[in-house]
Length: 300
Image 1 (cartoon, rainbow, N blue to C red):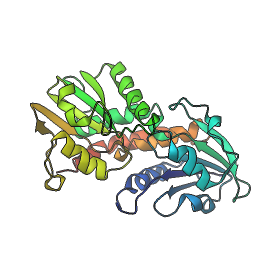
Image 2 (tube, one colour):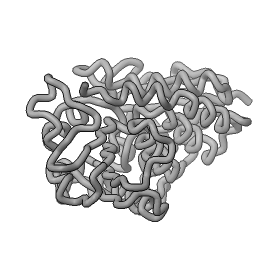
Image 3 (cartoon, rainbow, N blue to C red):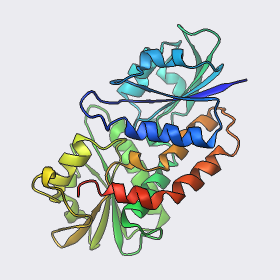
């Protein structure tokens, strides 16, 4: 029986680079096989969420949201736009971090089973992607000793799940006992990323935003808020000196090649048979890690 992977993401009418990581991860997964089809769908770009299921021919469709947390988009917008018949968020039986998948049909496509997965941002493998991002930006596969690590989220009182994912991954990284210090920080709630140097004693601090794509927040707000630059348009160094610390700003974690592994893991847990594709993705993204690091210093 044929199977398709559909990666769904927000996209943007204003920032053409917003969808680039989604397309990159789709290309990576196509290259290693595992699915008969790999498609992408967006809220703000084409192909739209409303149309994307009509673009696949396979009988089994695995839909993986490229979003950081459970909330409005994963619980309301995506199921509505895909016309998932009988969708009820309680079927995920989630505490805000544990959504895995539910199998449904879609009302406007016949004969397909749609396996709707939880967002990538709450999957346990995202912890490895954050660490990989730190390795990439420092170009040191052993980075940790002498370094602090900050996991940065947007944070909002309108969605308590937004902060849960940040604390979840920060706690898991701290349990690795790899970095000297690990701290969760936020843009719109305490503790704030503006005061990043107040939370670390380590001279070197890697800052990894848990965002899917680079854009307004990761390329403009956070660098200016941390004091890397007074004006994002003039760029900044990586690392940058701020109040006696060297800040290694990594940019959006979603641009890291290893994200393709998390997408595959979500689909496999929903029942996809991808053979050795997961292992091949890991090999492929490890090999290209140094190149990804060069692009990570996007503010320069």
